[in-house]
Length: 98
Image 1: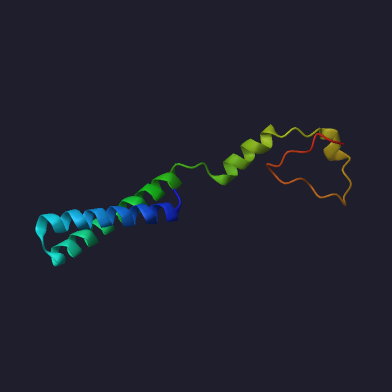
Image 2: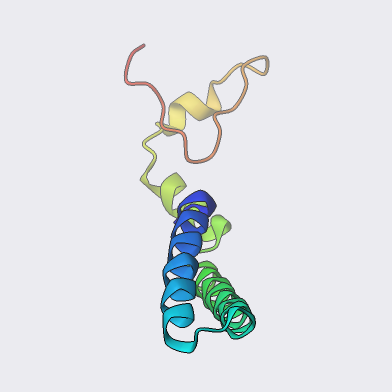
């Protein structure tokens, strides 16, 4: 989820929460405090969700190795490669064209 999408949702939820809280309590001060607490709780939840998503991603080194294993490069082409030619990047497949 992008930050802009999260921010729009956060503001929308806080506006609806503030209106509902004011309608129930009829107090601007209580509405402000409760809305502030709600904003902090939502942001903590968003932070935990981001940490969870980061924790469950594959490390870049392992995924690069997996992509490199799927790359089809003839061994003869590697041995006869001129020194002036740059080696291909890991994870970038070679062109099937000559």
